Length: 261
Image (tube, rainbow, N blue to C red; front, side):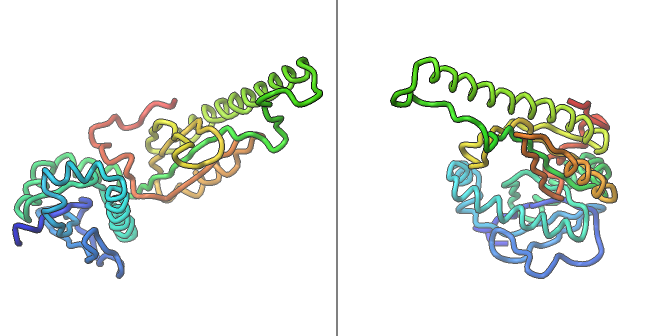
């Protein structure tokens, strides 16, 4: 391979029958390649050294547009792979110099990859977010007294609006704790991420729970029903998936089951 092209590694899998779905493209716009080494397969693609070699990559990782496009291409390959096998997604921008470097990556991480694949086999990731969402009937907190209104009325409206927001948040928090405990018992593993900043995500409400669960694919319908059965005024529950198990890619070094929140 030319020295101006490096090997990007999307994921590691066990050898599998069949091929990637037609139309699966990697970062370079070409179908990814499967490189088998022993009892593991690396899913790779060629990328330009001008972007992915060590020095230019550090600069590129500060470019949010480039980072978003790379993440989309990475995810597209892993998603396509998930339709034919159980992949272990690797960290974004895992790059080797050439095929020999990819083989060393598989050798050095062999035991960890094998343990992780054994725990992820037949499982998918579901995401659950809970938001405290202001109700349509909530009284908005006034920024200033209305013309003709008394100071007492102004303070009463501010107090009512504050109590309404606090009530929504408390209901969402209580529901989140109850739901996380129930879903964790149903899942192989669960992990809680930092709440999303809704000013960046543009999602309405306040994110109270941002969790991911590793679920046996065969038990996914029950898991989905548990989430869809939840209802609480002023609280919105959002379910996403099934995804490749990104949140559990390092699961080989974890305890068999994480404790409930």
